[in-house]
Image (cartoon, rainbow, N blue to C red; front, top):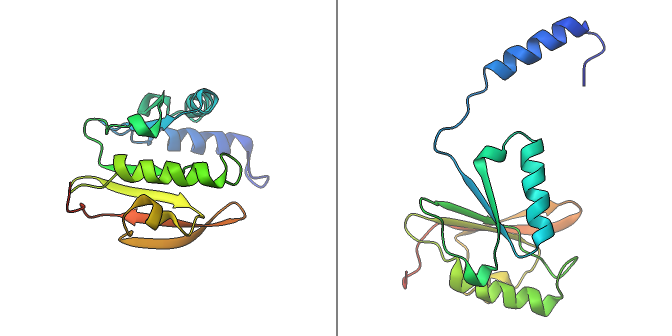
Length: 152
């Protein structure tokens, strides 16, 4: 990409100057988990293409077997909704399992994106905050959990 009104040499020079000033995070790691091996492969490939492969570790794992990685402080989930993947009852069962495995603690926060209006009930805990947002053309909610549950 280049703006037509700038000479190519100027564009290249500025782009390289900006790249030289990128600060790479130290001790930063993102973890991704999915039950689908193809989704795991695509995520790894896309991370490498985006130049962030060294910061992302992606594994095939069922949410029923989820344990928090050491030092993990934030979990963001975009589970299947029963729209494209899974049927509605399978999605609801997944939310119930998530409620047992992903509860927030004093040092961990949880954010879940879903269009399902029954999510909080199925998850087993009312969100501390929820916001409307769109995932493509689909109206969803971002459920935010900041506080530990009494049984953590």
